[in-house]
Amino acid sequence: MTFDRIDLKILDILQRDATVPVARIADQVGLSQTPCWKRIQKHEEAGVIRARVALLDPDALGLSMTVFVLVEAVEHTPDWRAGFLAVIERLEAVRGVYRLAGTYDFLLRVVVADMPAFDRFYEELTAGVRLRSVNSIFALECLRAETALPLSACGAGIEARS
Image 1 (cartoon, rainbow, N blue to C red):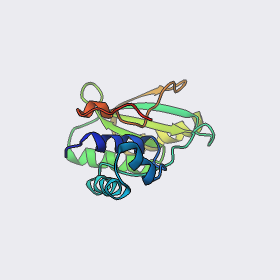
Image 2 (image 1 turned 30 degrees about the vertical axis):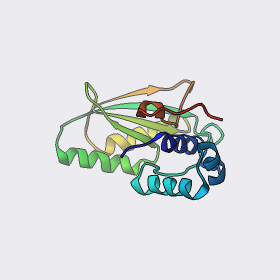
Image 3 (image 1 turned 90 degrees about the vertical axis):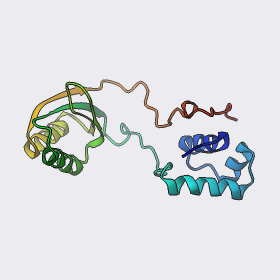
Image 4 (image 1 turned 90 degrees about the horizontal axis):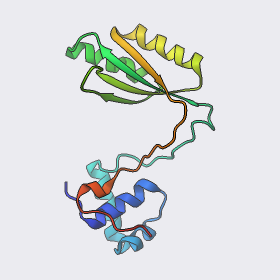
């Protein structure tokens, strides 16, 4: 899929605040409301816009511990991977799963309330699937976490925001 300057501006506005009314987005990108809405719908149908969500403050909800868990697979077969992914799917604390190249095979981003909650997570993970190794890295403080993607890297660039 290709994106022109207007598409990228629309996407940038929405990824920063999905509650911005279409009329205001249209005004900011220089379109009337109908063509702007059609572009937004096109991006939703294509899966470019995956969801519209509210970002919650984990500290306000008592979910103050973020742990990055590095997993080394015991084997590299389709059956093992399917079993691993099934276990991960059942663990609500897992907020992100990345397949890696290098020493470790997967990186999990885990969000829990405290150390006892992490210990329960760890027990469920290791009871559910055989692993060669697990290395946990505890985040002391989140200094920066962006949800917005760097759309200027998409080629067309984005003009300065209003």
